Length: 294
Image (cartoon, rainbow, N blue to C red; front, side, top):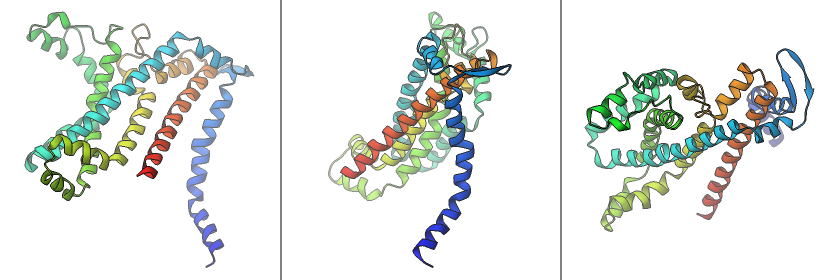
């Protein structure tokens, strides 16, 4: 078989996947951008308005609030789902007895298998100002002044949702980091101990560099997930109270399906795509540069 025929054979094998990607991923993205340049809804014909929908977004205070909430979500998620999860995974592997290790992994992983909708409803009960466990626990330890209507006050609604999301995600990312740590040759740690390196030095000098690939993947997924978040907010607050917990996903949904402002919703969807795409590209470029330097 010639080299040319092998090349055509390779393209033939990947053609179905390319067709599916083109039809169900790339075409919808391009068509959504086209639709964002029109003013349209389900009951009237579309007419071209250029970038007016993007001007509307730039002047919309709710849009900027939603963007800030997504950014806050991303920052907290990076700290908890990447930083804290990596530390938790290292502790599990280095300081926990092997018999207890498997039990703890299972316990930490259980929240990840719970549906986001179910978790949102569960935490809505926990945050209930009258019967919720959170306020009851604070009252039991004498912190009555700390009690709140957690999902009913603009100052606490978004933070309460973020806390629920971290509770559900930390165990999953910790298990992924455990897998990455287990692939590190144990000889590195033994040599570090001989040289007098303590656990903290081993963590920063061996564990962190050796799980860089997994860390990069988790950073990309975590940030992208923070800007794509929808279910948690929709189930727990629907963006309220007073739009204080709106994120880009819920604001898109409300404009598209409640206010029937499809053109503006398409513009918000384009913004979400651009943000997540740029973040992923920047992270991959930085990672590749580091790999070349090494």
